[in-house]
Length: 544
Image 1: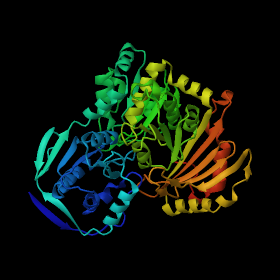
Image 2: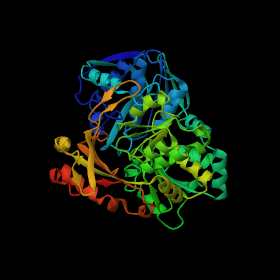
Image 3: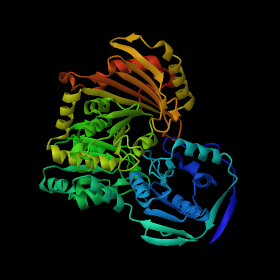
């Protein structure tokens, strides 16, 4: 095998975000662009030579071509073994599972998560560490520094590997093992949930499910587990074939983009459980018959009930949520006498807490939930947890959630996204808000009196690292909140997210429309942020 050393020049825009490097395909296709980033990662990995790594992605456009490039570069950089999902496919949680099970040094995950795919859309690449979770900031900062100084990369001059045939292949001194992308993950799920009880309930008709894979990575996983293993009807899985452009859709599991599932769940004869996952399989949406479960409520309900499921019968060590996620899970944690941690957005912040054994369950309002079984959020895990819970509780999704509200109160919650905003305008809005913080405490706006106003800063309780400027919080003494945050998951412009939360203890007021219940906060958010005025956007792009 001949190894070529290619001269290159740095690109200035390769700083990884909360979930790696995400760019438009046309950017990634620039000469040496992907190679620069991959070489920078390989340069930063400790003891890369001779160590095993994992590789796979969500199947979007350029996934297979990028995988071949990474294989050749890994061989040229002395990687000892590379485990690659068949077809270069691996869901993000399955990649985490494989890294942990095989004791790999880490892995490349090719995905832009819930972003659209296709020649004119998005591509992403991130590196997960040896614990299976997203690389910590000290690693990604070192990668970024390396991308700014890189002058050459190494790549093997060799034929492409057959990605579709399981088995071992040799590329120079490196062994490439093409593995079944579903098998290890399915085995892990069977150890956590009562597959026998779910099989009995599905086959008897006591419960039913409709899962929308959105033409993304979880289609093969859902078919293998829900249909082949648990016996759900073959048509229980919609849009099950992964496509490079996700069938022209937007693989983001919410009521806007998973509209086919929503229509079925609001139609007569709806299944017991409706669910969807996203491009790379780490997000989830949960629905019942004419009933949508917010991600914040889903996290809280699971926290209160997870001990009923086989893999969690010893109870929860603690829970964690991202700062913008509603405080519903906090109330459960207090009732259970366990710790609840508030972290910045980004799954990597949960990693230290999970590795230190401080938490069992964690989640984000952006449709991400997971436990200590892997170090990523896990869409299909959340679906199986709800399916198992339905078999145990023998109640509908709506009844379980309403009973939870009666016990703990309801957190009315919504997120308003302003997508594609020019970055300068987004930065200006945040600066305008920061300039008001000192004068907000103690001010009253109708029934809402400000008791806390800050730009959230997180000190990791495990390693002491500090992450400042994680979003603006305006908290009121009645438990309501408004949070403003610029998202790091897009590829162009800026996405401003406004999170609105109001707590309601009175069970007679638990059936309001969330937008009506939050109307005073919606108006106050505009008054404080001047978002519509400054951006020229009359309404949010997406409301969830």
